[in-house]
Length: 195
Image (cartoon, rainbow, N blue to C red):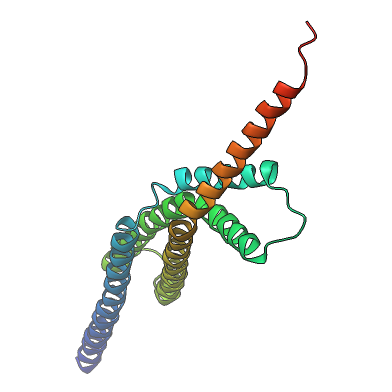
């Protein structure tokens, strides 16, 4: 009788410990889910829809400078501005894909956490590795958070640079094009028509 009592008591204690571990694990997964939801909201509220068009306009400016700007000496200030615009253009070119990849990562992360939570609640799978799986999910969440932070920082920097330099460089490059066109017309007038 004592043996049965101790056996049942041992099962009761083991069951209680398992429920505590289960609750702790589920709480950790809930924290991860909350973090993923927050990151997804931040990324969704900072879309980069116009970045492709901005990148194309910056590329047009860059091409006009390459084709029509000829100087005997280098204007350092202008060269730095053109270089800054070029860097902003490169960043703007990949921002949209970065945004889509982050949103996809958040969706995949939520699904992974949901499946792990289901396994823990139903005691499915390799129970000994639950903690390892949770640590893995936390590290993926940390990586997504860093990527999201980098995305927002790069986006703000590229948009700021673009807004600061676009009008000035666009006007100057259009003036270069206009000057080139005038010189070309003048040169055509000087060449006699041989027909």
